[in-house]
Image (cartoon, rainbow, N blue to C red; front, side, top):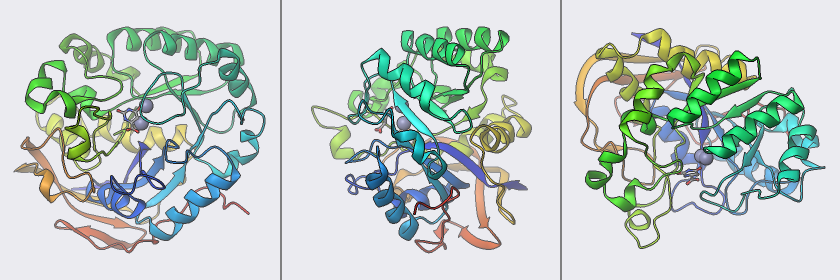
Length: 353
Ligand code: DOR
Ligand code: ZN
Ligand code: ZN
């Protein structure tokens, strides 16, 4: 069966500064192995992407190493609320961190939140990491500034209820859910191990997970939040939050399809059509994924292409497998092998300079 190449609007490529976890070459290889032909990369690198210089440096690395198409978010900081907007055409959008997570981009000052919401062009995406009460703040800011806002990786019943109410009032918010918040819950923490289970937002209760499934019509996108860290880091005394997700996501969705929990249209709406619309992304000609929706197999993290080398889904039995991926007419992945060269991916935004 042939489906379009997937778009993942939320990945962490780690380069520059975290190349031992992932780089543009391994991260985009992982994307292709997961049927993802376009990624939008988050700015919480080292240094973070917050200005022309850091954006240029990251785009130059991506341009020479990426194997799938890409765009790069810029991070909202206290120091760039007047200047970030001029870079909008060259970015995937603006990313704002209203809560603590990996990296140093958390914005504490509500005035910074408000000015960024006002200044970032309404024609360019604005994404927020906002959990619980800060999600309510982000929705209010979307309303008072009357601009579209995309709510990243929502995970709680209270959040999806609030988003339903906001959408019903016509507030211009969209949202995404990550596969780990659909297919894992906090009862899985002992078997994954406490350190490896660390993720932001945290794995939620069974009731929260059920609420996401019950309100699928309010969920615009599936996004992996692919956040690679090494097994050594995850097993340390201070485990960083995050899971790799690019290679397990589509097989998990196809498994849910085999169980009657998702339709193919549900998947394609959230992995292709809605992200293309929300993030203003171009179509990719002659780009498709061949899948065997009936193949049963066991996910083996040791065979994955991400440098992080582990997965919370290791050993899961899945129904639905990716056989090959074609990007712009060229076979870029087949039977477990990456055939795309580093640098063959395109920046889908306008070039800087
Ligand atoms: O678990 C997470 N890891 N959540 C985030 O928001 C950031 C991410 C990371 O960059 O590791
Ligand atoms: Zn986040
Ligand atoms: Zn993230």
